[in-house]
Image (tube, rainbow, N blue to C red):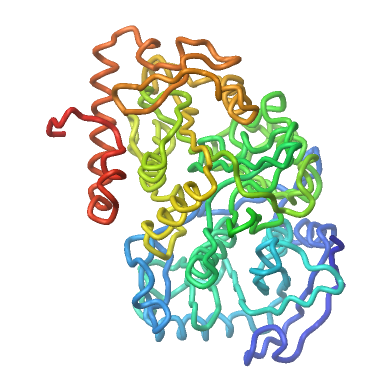
Length: 538
């Protein structure tokens, strides 16, 4: 696809934002080369030894979910699943912030980019992104789909990001100076007080998670996708740190995308034009595709370099553990050119179980698939956030609760129908610990997880016998090519079997307590498809 790059041009009219006069110089649709030149000139970042642009996102090195709001109006009042992640904001407060924000931008140098999301033309959504900083415009250039010269996609949404613009909490209905506000009636997203670029992509993803299931009957998914040489498609669901980006970047398969996709009646398609990979402890030997993508045109966030050099220290957590790289999908050598593929044959739910009790691979029934999709389990370990000293279970519905404006039940029911209609195989993959929990056991080697995924995709487990894991009711293969047999059943890797059963029971209780909120909304078969606690009180 050819990219429509243009030179800097001044706007002195209402062309950029409908009904808003912005008198400053606006740089429209600049190439990555020009954006990087501006970023260096304005001291927004520096170049690494490989040419990647290193930036620091200042106070915020991750999303701030408590500062995300949806305007409550006629469109959203009865449809949005209002909760801690979907917080309502009155229209009057949106208007106050919007008016102050556009007045703040008047006269300033801005970077404007027209792009779109959804690789499948039937669902394409045109977005104009207006940034206060050139490096953030480069992020939009990397992450969203770029229009060709003759593209006719209409711009229907606007996103304004101004890191140095701060809200007035006492008067504008928000608790803090930073904010993300989505207005479905105005088709507008406001982001202020934060330069963390992930807020841009996740705000747009939230919009699609509302529009596609509700208006187009398309399942929107927080997952990676790739396809084999025979056209077989695989989806990888998982929260941060579970291996979604790493496992989907497979040099024997074409990458469709690493994070956000739609699934309609005939295909799976990427929402984006780029990847936003977590790069803490990035290793050239283990993740060669991602490592090679860290080059000119890529943005690298919140990393440090070895003293006296511009060589990135990928192991450093000095600024944050959430170090990230944003690069165009084409930087992955085997990326699919059309960003879409066939109906999936296999779905992987990835979890980094820090309790060390889940099998490294298990096959899920249709009911178990819905149960674990609604659960969205992984675990945090010591060091990932303040106050976490022991493994802490994390449940995020549909493996993406912070980005789901609608009820998780709706997405789960859509997935369940598709699994059943297309006879899709679903697998639970533990990329976490074995032989004990975090601090006692060891992380399952990436080479074993890759062997598991390869065995599934090649059909090597089709003729293998499976046995039931007693603690969680999961079906586990008795052997798997490339994986030690004793590793497949976690109890065999623990020195103290009683400790294993006690820990497994503890995690099973966490699952049960989390699932209580869904129990009345799902079938008895789904509600009974979770871990087994022997009817004992947790």
